[in-house]
View 1 (spheres, rainbow, N blue to C red):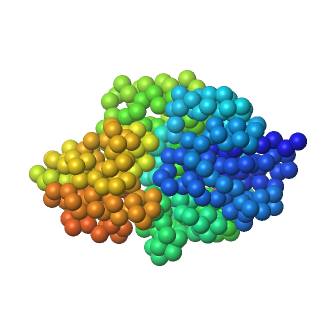
View 2 (view 1 turned 60 degrees about the vertical axis):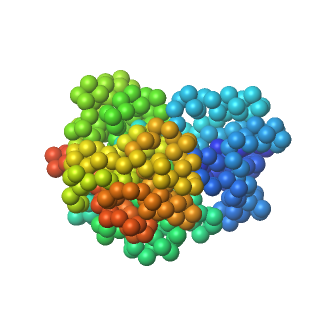
View 3 (view 1 turned 90 degrees about the vertical axis):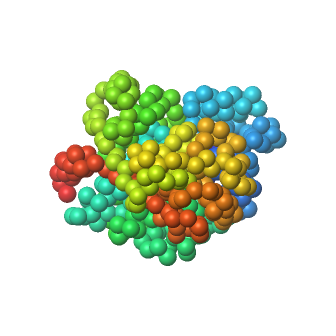
Length: 438
């Protein structure tokens, strides 16, 4: 008899696991997906065009809170956990819910979910959301693009209502962002590559994405999301750690997997971290991956404008400070370094932005750039416009003024890669390419 399965997800890893392990697999019946972390992604359906011949009606997506009822109603055999950046305590709590309801709790391995590319793959992953993998992915893209055709493939963020349209997306121009109706979270990852004249793919079906990317690439960069492990088998895996959250490299799923698999560990943000925390991260990494190369890296912060003495609304990268757990980001650090006074955004928050502050009470003087849909983007805009301040200090990877119409000057804050760190990366990549005879 077929095993009945429910897949626990957050619109990304869950769809990939289904495509690789369960689509067209007669040994299983996937009864449903559940959804969490991302607003408004439950209540959709994984469409038949993506689900394959066994699911002519598609597969429903329910809120994860309904998991016990789904297991009991459908006599589910296996609950497959398929999302990232959660503590081990959280994961085992979900296991307890599934087990008590009557299902086995399953976590698929990299070996069973990574696809093989015909081209060399360099993967950049992390131990937590917000470690700084994006700027390292872009720096590696910049270094390699001087000699090779390089294409980046980004971890999925299919938050729209039409998943079929998001099957395989290619971004090379700003118009592509509008054409694909990208959220702020998507723009934050795609726009920087466009600014560099690059190409980045994303979507839902990562086999199809890979086949298209291979047609125009000598080298593929896997730009990871959250602390998930790669969808493609890497020839080189670089994992980023954050000493501002020392110890998290051993406590969060699946970040520890990235540490154990890493060829190179980057301990990032050392210029703003305490030495004892940097050493703690290095000890933890060596304990579980003794042969890994470790480099210390700086991520200098640059502010485009003068904010000294001004009252500013600090807008931070949303995932980093929400489920990533950080109470501050580059914007707060920049405000402190440049003598600006941060305005408390909470009194001005409206709608889902107010709900975000209620859900994440550790956020006090920063505004997360929540923008998972048109309504939330509008509420972010209203929150900013209602605030009494001199300027907006926007520490998201995008030009926020392109997305929201605000009534105050917007000054961008950017994380970079330090010159010495960039040189180390270039030397590492040169050695890797020589071994590959490239």
